Amino acid sequence: MTGAVDDYGRLIEAVAATRDRDAFARLFEHFAPRLKAYLMRAGAPPGAAEDFAQDAMLTVWRKADLFDPRRASAATWIFTIARNRRLDALRRESRPLPAPEMSLALEEPEQPDALVSEAEEAARLNAAMSELPPEQLDLLRLAFFQGDAHSEIARKLNLPLGTVKSRIRKAMIKLRIALEPLRETP
Amino acid sequence: MTAAQHNVSDERLLSYAAGTLSPPEAVVVATHLALRPRVAAVARRLQGVGGRLLEELEPQAMQPDALARVLARAETDSGRVEAAPPANDMPGLPEPLRRYGLGPWRWMGPGVRVRDVHAPRDGDCRVILLEIQPGRQTPRHTHGGVELTCVLEGAYATEIQRFDVGDLEEAGEETLHQPRVVSDAPCLCVAALDGQILLDGWLGRIFQPFVKL
Image (cartoon, rainbow over all chains, first blue to last red; front, top):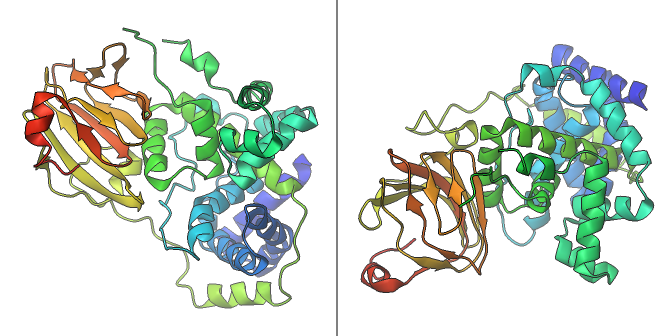
């Protein structure tokens, strides 16, 4: 898994460095069908999802030099491109709404010590995710792909809102992505 | 009054990472993250979850000519995209706000002025900058919808909480709002406002006809 992720990162770097079309083709083969699936999971028809995947991959080509393998895996970087365009793509048919150009560099100026180990971080996250109970993983998928608020997830799954909240909360704590510990720090 | 940091809620951060937050709210959350590196690190980890979930999706076959079409578009492309130059006259703003144009300052009561941030709107929801002089408070108002506020300079306090630079206040419909600036310098905030603000109290009744916020 980690090896494959690193590989895609190198392909993006090759696109950035030499406009390498073979490298791009390999990225396309892997990610375009997943980007299409991503928008279809959000409720888009196949044609719109096809356009979305092509547009997102063109963005990968154009912005490849913004990719920094020390800060994100290839999948995370491409996911960020997809999520930045998601609302726009889903709303295009009803009314146009430009998405805010959120930074592809993933926002924040990095603390030097936080740069240490993207690979470690990714490996840790992968391990933690494969240990999540299926019902917690399902809720994360709903939040990420369907874009549901917690109350909508509760309605769809016919679960009490409190149950949904606590399952997502547990998942976030296991993945060490919950903010709560920070809240207690002045 | 609590002195704890006010960071974005887990639920809203999850929506932000997933790209499902409304664009005006996303601009305010991005500003909050720019001022809170530790929270931004959590957001980055959440995006890692998104990347991992993307990897696990069942692939959907693309059209046979999809790659050729994208490469043809790349061909006509001038190449890399230059970063847009900063678009406004307030160099002290956090990076997520530097790229948007700003409207003129408008008076909104004694010691209070606002200007539009030309970020994408979402229906009635839009982004504004709000500047309040020390000791002043905004006219008392209730919210028609969600209000997200991030403090950029100075500090304000409501009846029960204090908000300093970087803090994010997430107010809902139920919140009755009367923040007062408690810093020595003016307090500058960025906010995503949904719906009209309903001013109340005697000050509100005087200002309501003039203030289109």
